[in-house]
Length: 424
Image (cartoon, rainbow, N blue to C red):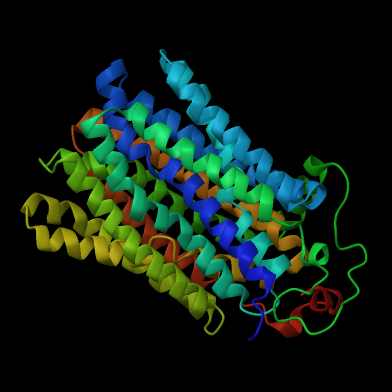
């Protein structure tokens, strides 16, 4: 019987870790109304805290990538999970709106960062020589899995008990994953005396691991990327990606549905239903990104997402559940499908060694967009008493993103330096 390569065990532990962390950020839409009702805080204020969380874990990404190089995978995952658990425990003590901003915006944002930004490409790059795109797609889809399984559960717990019980459930899952990481996670294939999956012989990896100040390492990566037009195009498209996904749909979709008379559990179930197709679409996207031009994949992903967002207000206003389900299917297939091709393009353009840190900066732009939409969606609701303009504008921006990615200069393997080819 053929022995399973340990890379797949590392991928499995990483997969379930991202599920737990991802549900914390994805659950913002479920907690928005309960926080508003219990504490009397305004929707823009609560949205601001969730927006800061998205921005904070995004802008921390490049530094987390550098810390991964300096401290190692296992120690970073344990430290980050512990930080997240501390933040969740503090939510039981909050009573002022600034407590929410500090706890959810900063502590939870910092604890989420490594899991939701650079961990997927880091694990794929270091543990896989073959099937990197597929590994990235699987890990990216893990946030959808958490959304699929846990969002309706959290909504039912909130509706039948309180939001505190829902937080307690997430904490329990986080403790389980902390133990799993402690027991099974390894820094690199060398720790197991093996090669990355699909690699046939040992390569000269001298000087590959970066040592030094992670802040300097992160900014060096940024300064080298700023000179490339492709960085600006990818960062700009990913800003719109974050704006149109976790920032808008993740934070405000449930509240938007509730404003049309759809119950909380039903709205959460619709978002969860997106998770089914999100998982399928993202895994398939990883598979396709190994085989097709990643620029054209991104072009169609953004174009279809924009069309679906523009049509959503009409589906909700019609009250036709069939059209709402059609939206959840199309949007779900597209939600995180942009990540594997974007990671692949980053790897092709900037080389394997630099790509994790530079992708961290690109993902920081993604989360800046998410923060803008999370807070901006709350403001739009406050002034117009509905979300229609927010969703329509996001759809138009997605069309703009499709134009950004199609003009990215294709980087062929032949253009990579000999050193980068050895490292990849």
